[in-house]
Amino acid sequence: MLIHGIGHHWRAWEPVIGPLSRHHDVIALDLPGFGRSPASEANRGMPTAVAALGEFFAELGLDRPHVAGNSLGGAIALELAAAGLARSVTALSPAGFATPAQVRRALAVLRSLRFGAFAPTPVLRVFYRTGFGKRFSFGALVTRPGVLSAERALADTLALRDGKAFAEVARHGATYAFAGDPCAVPVTIAWGSRDRILEPVQASRARDVLPVARHVTLDGCGHVPMSDDPRTVARIILETTAAVPLRSGSASGRLDPTASG
Image (tube, rainbow, N blue to C red; front, side, top):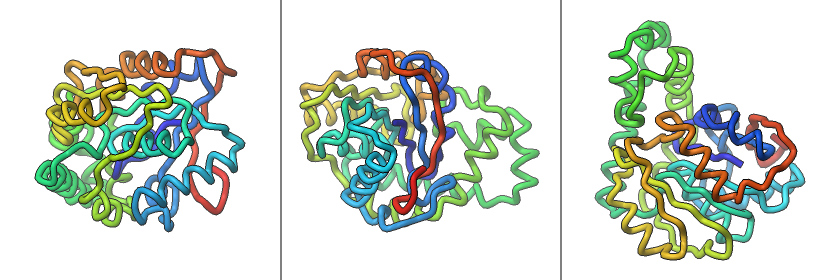
């Protein structure tokens, strides 16, 4: 189960779905209020988000899936493990380990990116045909914006712009800190060495809070490492799941607590 960050959508995981699907069934979902999923009560803080995902797992007949998450999704993945709902966790630059000042800075950057996303869609479409356009809009998120296609850059920008739950999730996230205990299952925390949203110094706090977890530095990666180094990210996820071969396949999904994805 792959969980994206605030303002993103399931396509954040596209670069790693192929390698992962050779070993596991893969579901990359849209969190409530993002991508194709409608906003819901699940946006009212971490406990409701975890409960909604637990219901989603039950609807799909999933018994404690392996979970990987990025940013907000990383925090949700850790909370799912703490609630006994995950078999293993790979958290990439997870939220929940920042100081209040660091959280304010991260949200300020994300809000500024979202403000720019409200440019007219035809303008954005032309803008992303240029290397400068992709560097300008995505340089704070990834270290290799040039690898994004113009279509993918536009889709990610529209997901950020149209994410109906952005404001509410950001409001709850401003005071969130991880305080659970997921150490009964394998946990890997991986941090991009060039993360400009949740800066790498926060990895030290994660080591203090989760000393039993495996901690990995993703050299040269930014906040969304799946785009910067998909091969390494896929390998780390598979190492965490112990690379147990399951039925091959992949799927994208939406999370609507009132209906299966």
